[in-house]
Image (cartoon, rainbow, N blue to C red; front, side, top):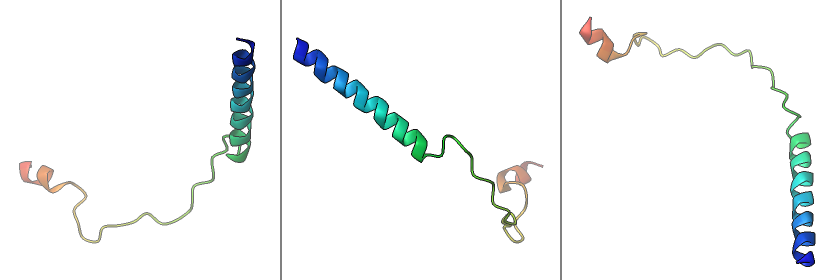
Length: 56
């Protein structure tokens, strides 16, 4: 029983350490800035879906 508890404790410590490492590598929740790129356009397509244009 003691061996099981020691192994369980080691597994918990490894999971905590892994979580800390992943959070640090991820940038601690920082959101990268939004790129300033012009929005895409669809040429001459209408701004409403075709199914909605037929009902009007």
